[in-house]
Length: 204
Length: 204
Length: 204
Image (cartoon, rainbow over all chains, first blue to last red; front, side):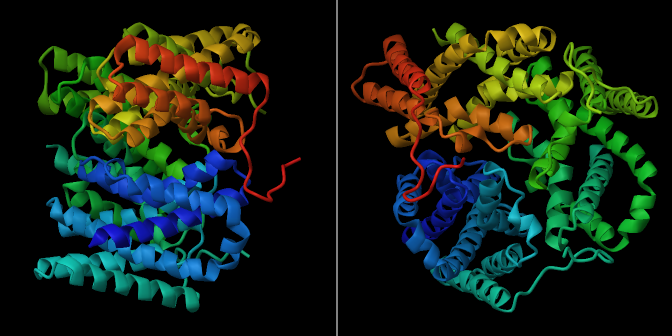
């Protein structure tokens, strides 16, 4: 089941990485590098932490799909930028999917639920952090105060809970992904923001 | 033996990471991320280089202690900041402990003494570098010229020497950690600085 | 065969990392850190992705050669800077060698040709990216538009093709390395640049 959905998530994340590369006026190679690591960076971190060979190095699609996204961004970035509101919806879907799949993989390899949730979140948000570090930016995950890791945490926690209740497979993945997706969409629509430390004022 | 001491080191390092997050006005999630990776990032690098699953993903304390430190920094950062001189002492203790434990683990897995010393230093200073990279800063380890890696190198070298002499266990860890700790404290008190390349002038 | 050639590549890459450290006025420790990770960072990434212990932690030379390069840069950086045109030739040679050796190692461990090419490029260019991230710079690989990854891609692709044709060993490594080297030299001499995304203008 995951293969196709997984590639959709990878495509969307790769597209966001490639667009970032276009915005920063990177060349064709730079755009492809950002597309790739944005899409599969989180999964690579998860797999290294689990101690297995990264899936990105086993499966052809994990390389070809980011390259395809880079090519699309290279030639049609104005059109893609205009479709960004739609891309953000897909990004939220990718977030939901990746946290569910990441948690599930970690549980499958015998990690404790708490660590599996942690790795689910890493899978979902790690690519974006790597994209920002590679392009020399402060990671938006840490700085923009949007709720991005929090929906991933919710989805991952639900996945771990369902796993403990022996609800597995497609139903578990889908419902966890939908929970994270829905929460992320609500957070974007209502501009929910994570709290600053007590007594710290907003930046103007 | 290490468990408790180890968690103390992790707590102190996590606190310094969390404070850095508060200073940069990160949100609650960002503070927790910095706390976690500052505390266990060095150990994760060490374990990946040795080729074993990072201890941080096996042990509950490695996740919960950084979260606790993040919560403390979130609510009581002014008090913690005021206690910083004390925190620096604990940080030096964490440095000593981590280089000794890291070297010992590498030796235990059969690495050569020189590589074990290298990994001991990575364990001790890696978290701080990851903290700086994640928060978009130039790594202070490379730029501030304080003696921070050098005490870790001394402690690690002592650990490797004791190991070669078949002095192991608590006594070896403690004496190596104390050596690194004492040297770090002296370096802070006397503002010892590492030399610049020949002919390079100080920055004003 | 590789041992000696490999150490030459490591030495040249380490020298470029150490010089970068001198230019940024890092202290002795910082210079050594940049020398080491510039030289072996790409190989470490490759080995982690393959799932084997990094060669840099098995072999004494991988630590001592970067330290030697750091010492040379520390004391004689003006002379080395003056020899930079020559260093760039050696850097191109290192690039060629590393992409060939990296691809070959990945194929040896059973990776698919496409992934082996990817890892060959990572081996060749990864150290420079890590150098830039550690020293707090935007990675030049992504920003400078020089053809640096592209020659590595060519050399890696040739290595994979020869491997498929059962041409292996020294002859395959050498011819792939020479291809990448020659292309890199031509790209430098003629200032070939990678294209920006369609419609994106040059930075002035």
